[in-house]
Picture 1 (tube, rainbow, N blue to C red):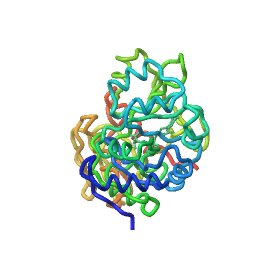
Picture 2 (cartoon, protein in one colour; picture 1 turned 135 degrees about the vertical axis):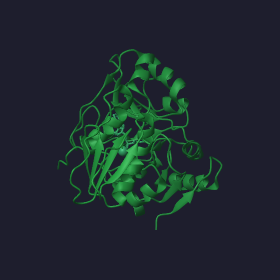
Picture 3 (cartoon, protein in one colour; picture 1 turned 45 degrees about the vertical axis):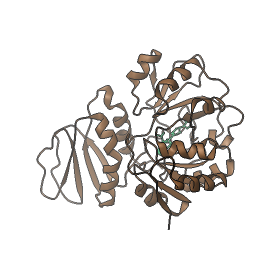
Length: 330
Ligand code: TXA
Ligand code: MG
């Protein structure tokens, strides 16, 4: 049985226990403000390799190093541009990951063989307490099987990764619900580029930095490009997810079908489970993964969801839904 320990704040003894496991090369799942991470000592290649095995993650997909402060981040890069300083002063701790040229100290496996490193300082007392207790950066992707839904509570981690994890720190449900915004500052002299939209919006970043590109491409598994982890299909529930225009509804109810409305719920045939989410991007971001997990666990085969508005505020939710509804490739 996977061990799950409830933690209540940065002084909880469970954090010391988790730190000891990490120091000796183990893997521990822990809460952040976005999703749960699967952590290992980020300077220990063998420990990081265990993350890849546990997740079934392709070796071409690098992992984020989690740090407790900006000074620790600076020690892991070969260059710290003025934009990085500006951004971390405003957003760290918080859901912003920066991609920068890596220092030699960053193990090859963390970078997936590339020359950059992704850095993030999570705004969660348990995550920060754990990083400080270990005294080293923690490599941590989302704590789910590769290409599946990210976990927003400890139970999601246990059902996705089970025995592959030495310990799960249970800090309750996460608050932001979608993974951090990833901003690429590694191409010196080039425009900053958002590799993954998230809780910190393109508009907020552009207001600080000037024009910012939004990378909306997708790569196929195993093909290492600008954003190696941005697979076309990702963040996917087991159920088939379809996106439809607002108010469409469904006509048949064969199989187990759930319909998710945004802001209002249209009339549905008997037997179709209707779910109403508010027309509020932040709120939907917080609830989305938990809802998809719940519908999966309840055995729904088809989830029909209304497509969110085209407005900027919805960019992160739209991105996740696009990937979650993309057709399975290989
Ligand atoms: O909110 C989050 O960012 C969560 C929590 C646990 O911190 N972490 C997370 O990690 O979502 P992961 O591994 O599931 O997603 C990180 C993404 C991957 O798509 C990966 O390819 C990309 O970041 N990434 C990591 N290092 C990179 C690098 N050096 N250059 C470009 N992309 C990178
Ligand atoms: Mg992930």
